[in-house]
Amino acid sequence: MAHIQTKTVLFTFFAAIAIALTSCRPYHITQVDGGVITVDSTLDLKPDSAAIALLAPYKAAIDSMMYRKIGVSEMTMGRGTPESLLSNLVADVLRESAKMVIDKPANIGLVNMGGLRNDLPKGDITCGNIYEILPFDNSLCVLTLDGTTLNELLTAVASKGGDGISGAKLVINQSGKLLSATVDGEPIDTQKLYTVATIDYLADGNDGMLPLTRAIKRSCPPGATLRSLFMNYVEKATAEGKQITSKIEGRIKVNN
Image (cartoon, rainbow, N blue to C red; front, side):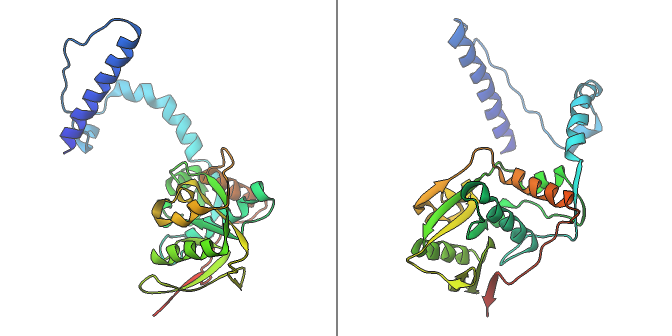
């Protein structure tokens, strides 16, 4: 399968070149040759010194950025349902980041577990750590939902066994059924409007979050990637002399 994919990529590459050329001048392809290059650990046995020398200054520049220390984590923060240290923290960051849109924290912060791709280790936090945790360019979206739609959203969260959530507490059963939910300690009022700070990927209804597509209002400020928001949070806490911490608070409880 890998060889077939490689051939397809090569053919697409040469076809793209042909299109680019023919769009400018009357060139025509007369022959296409291709081959298979296996990319695995055996390539490391014969490093190309010229290529290494060529890439060295770029690697040094990237390393200086990625290994830059920006804070300290008080503990190792893992991911997992129904709630986890890392998902709670990221959801908190999203909720607070709503201030740039509505001048106050959102009622709820929401991030999917699948969007967190690595744990945060105890000790020094580097830019590289944050890129490993949040490799995607997902951006902040602040949505306004009515109470009925919010209930549907939390039902969807429960059906997955939990996600990163802030500002709400859920009780679910082992089958993923929502038994009860509160926001800011109060039952959800179907006549009330609530704000949800999440990422554009979920706001578009992905990962089972279809209720978010029925938002009454949606605002996604340009350039506000979750990665940059999280990085800013770490740098601000560090400037205040704080370490990064989190805790399990029973945001999502599973009844037996």
